[in-house]
Figure 1: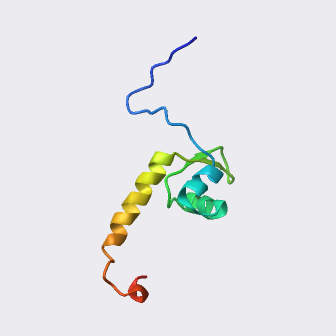
Figure 2 (figure 1 turned 60 degrees about the vertical axis):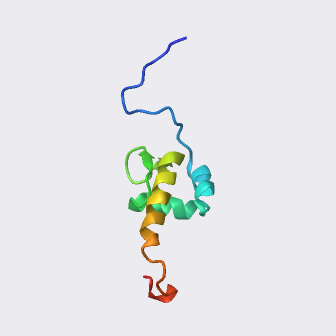
Length: 84
């Protein structure tokens, strides 16, 4: 059996497909893929050209959600209709 050392900074976390990532976020898969195409969520495209297969890491998505939650905390106390 071959054992390989991972370079520093690399993790063993597996990538998940768009369906599993969307389920984690509670979003429709198409919405997540659109966000990935726009660069709005942490995502890893596979392939060349216009169409990509997207893969995600749950830990990166969780960090992204937390960063968005902190950002939205600044809007607490404002009237809902005043939030863009």
